[in-house]
Image (cartoon, rainbow, N blue to C red; front, side):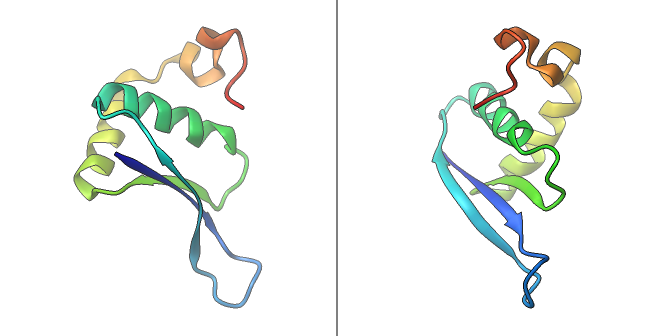
Length: 86
């Protein structure tokens, strides 16, 4: 499945979101959601940055997954040795 990284282009006149990168992620939902979360945390201080799947249903399932699965270890990247994601 595809994951799109978007950046809201607030500093230009159009003010629209633009695709920053496109990634192929796992077809297994839990793995894809974990990959998406790590991409999302990569630019966590950029207010105009967000990720979306190529299917709105998956986006909704991802939000539910985050509420259930994100804990302090995942939030700070402690399961990856303290590195959030490069």
